[in-house]
Length: 91
Image (cartoon, rainbow, N blue to C red; front, side, top):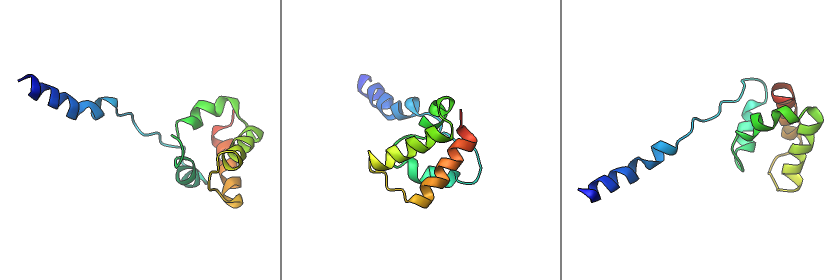
């Protein structure tokens, strides 16, 4: 009986820890953010950092991700991502 209960709890464990997926604000550029940013990290970082970042801050963050961490984002997409973040999540 203990073994059955333990297996049941192990099977259900992922459901207990599941968090709802963040939905970004629908606007021009949100698909670029989803496709590029969540390759490396959760999209939860966006609203967490939004009170602190305006256009200049998001510009620095996106370029840091590209230059320091090697995020594979081209220049055209980077600017669209920055514009989306500043407009929709600017502090």
